[in-house]
Each structure stands twice: as structure tokens, then as C-alpha cells.
Length: 225
Image 1 (cartoon, rainbow, N blue to C red):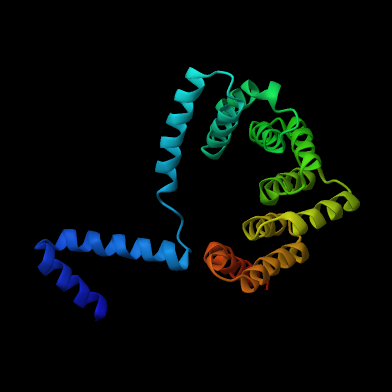
Image 2 (cartoon, rainbow, N blue to C red):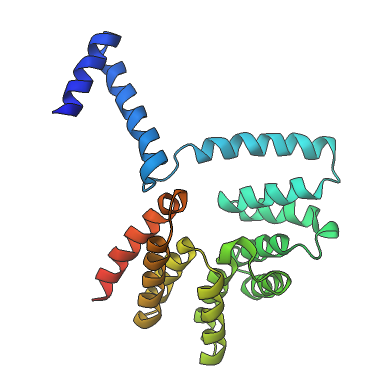
């Protein structure tokens, strides 16, 4: 009833029911992003497009800007434009030999293009340079590669331990789904529980950041039972 009352009040103020509805949706979205954080950020794509435009202007002016090429490669990787991502990343290669994110993004692009072994080599190099790179996402790629290649249990256990140690709650949840996909319910359950425990241990803004993954992990646990 309170929501309906607010809607009526906004309609009276704006003198337009559609505008009043749009204002309520906007308020709900802003409140959800600020205090809850379960819904995805629908503005991220728009911000990413603007950033890509800025970076493209930058490399046209300064073709030696390796950091700009790296960021463009990341943006294209996120958009699923793997050939373009690889092209941008290769333009930065001369200055990025010891940059862990460069090797991760290039390895991920190789993997998505079906060049699995090249991808594995690049991603393994990334985590050798910095085991904490990209909040554990490289280990998620390596886990899929190792599972597809049916690597021995010792290699899988070592990778799993690093995934647990360096992964963020989001990566733990995604890895749980991956192991569930390959019918390893024990590791999947442990990863889902790790996500939930990390969420419960957090306070403040981190709880909002991790809430979505904790909720999805609870759903994942229900699938295992």
C-alpha cells in the first residue's frame, strides 16, 4: 500500500502516470544498487562503450601507449570480440612481457578462439608472475582447461587449492558451477560453501558486493542435494 501511495503522490506531482512510474523504477534501481546489489549493473555496458571510444582516440594519437592497448584488449574480451582483443593485446606485447594481466587476457583470448594450449601457456605464465592476478579468474580458466584435458588428480588438486586461496567469491561461485558441470559434487559444494562463508564474514560494502554470489551459491547447493 505504501508503494501505491508513493505512486499516487508522484503522479499528482508530475501530472503524468508514466513519468511517475519511471521515477519509481529509477529510485528502486538506485536503492537496489546502493543497499542490496543482487541485480546486475545495467549501466556498465554504457560506461564501457564510452571508455572504449576514449581509448581508441588515445591509441590513434599515441600508438606507443601499451596500457591503452591492454585496456582495449580487456574490453573486447569482455564483449566476446576475441580476435579484436588479441589484436589490441599483441600491439602491447613488446612492453608487457612481465605484466600478469596482459598474459591472462591474451591467454583467455586464445582459449576462446579454440587455441587451448596457447591459452594455457599464457595463463600459467600470468599466475607465475602474480598468483593474485584478476582476483583468481585465471584459475577458473585453467580449471576448465585441466578438466577438459583430464589432467591427473595431483595437478587438479594443486590448482583447486590455488583457486580456493586466491579466488574471489564470484570466482568461487563460478568455479563451483564448473565442477558441478563435470560432476565433481564434492569440490562444487566446497566452493559454494566458501562463497557463502566469505559473504557472512564480510561487513559494509563488501556484503553488498558479494550478496548476489552468496545467494546463487545457496541455489547451487540445492542442486547438489
